[in-house]
Image (cartoon, rainbow, N blue to C red):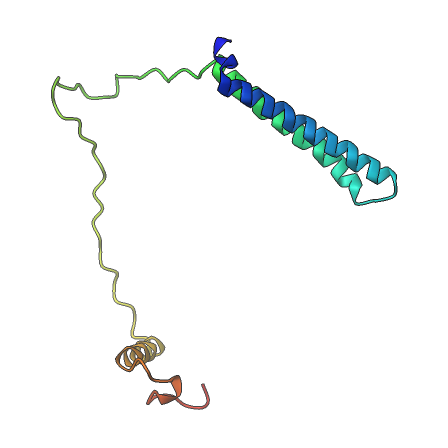
Length: 138
């Protein structure tokens, strides 16, 4: 409990209480507006207390994590190979070999499009209408 009263934690406690109080105050304000005839405020009347509950949950969770820190999992050494003292630790990674995709069937549309792209690369200032294979039907 001593760790929860450091200056940093006191600031956290004050901020959490201020956030909770602010959300509840905004919920009350929206309730007063909704009671006055503003129908849109009914949704906010219920939304702000949910935000206050969320801030309360975050504060409670942080306090619990400090009071009861999670224990690291016990290491099971039965599956690990025996390491020699002083030996470098290596990590085995799977080797992925790149394979070349099989050539696609001869597609005339793809070949025409690739020719068009090659022509555009060779003629950077050209317009699509300047392409020799261009027709007005496209």
